[in-house]
Every structure is written in structure tokens, then in C-alpha cells.
Image 1 (cartoon, rainbow, N blue to C red):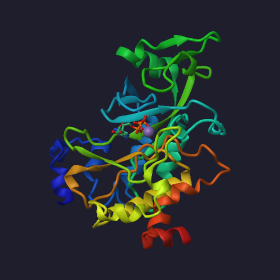
Image 2: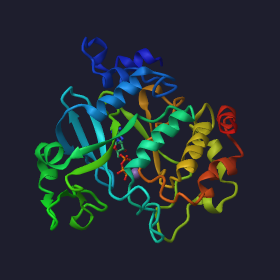
Image 3: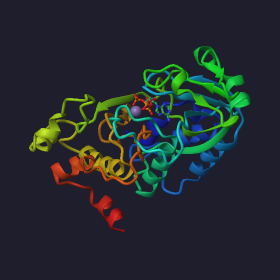
Length: 307
Ligand SMILES: Nc1ncnc2c1ncn2[C@@H]1O[C@H](COP(=O)(O)OP(=O)(O)OP(=O)(O)O)[C@@H](O)[C@H]1O
Ligand SMILES: [Mn+2]
């Protein structure tokens, strides 16, 4: 299926005043999220960093707090707030699945994905918000109910989610600004559905169990037989993802998504990098398990790394 057919999934094709985000979404192809040197990327980053915000709500699903940001020009971004200072490391007794999310990891991962020439991540930029005028006053519903003033008179909120959304883990202004990452919104799920895949080298997400790949040295041969890994680009894309995850130190790659309209022979979207950069002085070799067990890497990726 061509880019053109993908484009027709959007009304924006015929929209004369398509926003930069809509234009960006329309240009997503089967091969990549955006073209090398696409000027829309810088414009999108600039818009998300500077444009006026008119509404803020909580994004359902996921384990940690995320907010949907609506801009005046009707663009949208996914906001992940800063929780800890940049140099705050993963706590020694935390698992990859209990680690706090780091907004700067989302930002740096986008840049690294682009530098490596993958171009499979949505653009992400950092921005500081005013706690009262850009969050509290624009929040609604369940999110609004979680705002409060702390003992030191800072405005805080905690939102609702399954991890770290309580008074003890609130996000507070410092004194009245909060920093976060802003990821450009993916095309609306209803217009452009995505398929969610379980990552073959997913970890166990259990504090006492191991995953099959950790004990079965022949694991790659099993994966190789199973569609979509038995043909096309997908297995090589999994290797690329492993390169990215190793460099950012992300052990939390449990699922990945693709755009359904492109069928199986398309790139996996590089999404959800909030748990990277937690241990700056540690190389987690097990993240390279797909590459080591399959003894496989895309030639262009290897060349990029050597360069
Ligand atoms: N840029 C985006 N635009 C729109 N939707 C997004 C975007 N990024 C992520 N999402 C959606 O939100 C969901 C949760 O995002 P993400 O995985 O980043 O958060 P999370 O809290 O780490 O979730 P989980 O705990 O489930 O891993 C994703 O599965 C995806 O469907
Ligand atoms: Mn996640």
C-alpha cells in the first residue's frame, strides 16, 4: 500500500489549512515516520515548544501520568512531566518496571533515533510550563481534582494512574514552573489504527521469573519461524530497536506498535522511551540479546555505528 492510500485515511488531505502536525502525519510512510531533513520536524518542535496551550487532560491507559495537551491551533502533544533532577539515577532496588519515568529520556531518544537514521519516533521537545496558568487553569475532570497546594505553597498535581499517582509522588511547581517532554501526537487511532505487538524479547515483568529468551539459547530460531519475523524487514527492525534501547539503557520494551494500513512490511514505531538513561555508568548487555542470539544486524545500522 502506498503513502497515498495512507494519506486518504485523513480528512486533512482535502483540508486547505492543515496544521503542521496534520501535514507531518500525512507524510508518514510505510518506510519511516518522516523524511531525512524534513523541515516539518523543526517546525513541529517549535510549535510544541512555543504555541499557546488551551486545554489539558489526562491520557488514560499506561502506568504513569501523561497529559494530553491541546494547543490553540488545534495541534496536540503528549506531555510527560519531569519528576526528578536529570542526574537522578534508577534506584538500585528498583526493577525496570518500577523505575520512574524521565522526560529527558523521551527527548534524547527522539534525537538519537533521528541521528541513527531510523526516523521511527515522533518528534519530542522539552518545555517549561507555568503550573497555574498553563496547567491548573486549563485542566478538567479527574485531573483537575488532583491539584493541590503543598506545605511550601507550591502548586502540585498527581493525576490518576496505576504507578506513582498519589500525594507522595505528586508533580510540584518549582516554584511555579514544571518542565516536561512534549511528543507530537500520533494520528488519531480511529482514523489510522495501529497494531500492538508483543516484543519477542520482552522481559518477564515479574520480580522472580525469567523470560524464555533468558534461558533458551535457541530462542532466536523459534522467533525466526514465526510471522512477521520469518520474512521482510521486521526481524532486522527488532535488531535496530535493540541498538537504540542499548544506547539509551531502556529495558522496558514490552510491546511495540505498527500502523495497520501498512500491513506487516513496515517499521515498528519507536514509542515510549521514558525509562531510558536511568543508569548512565552502566551498560546493560542483556538489551543486546536479540542481536547476540540471532547474530544479526542490519548492514546500514552497523555502518552507521562504525561511522
Ligand atoms: N505521541 C503519541 N501520540 C499519541 N498517542 C501516544 C503517543 N505516545 C504514546 N501514545 C499512546 O499512549 C500509550 C502509552 O504511552 P507510553 O507507552 O509512552 O506511556 P507509558 O505510561 O509508559 O505506558 P505503559 O506503562 O503502558 O508502557 C501508548 O501505548 C500509545 O498508544
Ligand atoms: Mn511504558
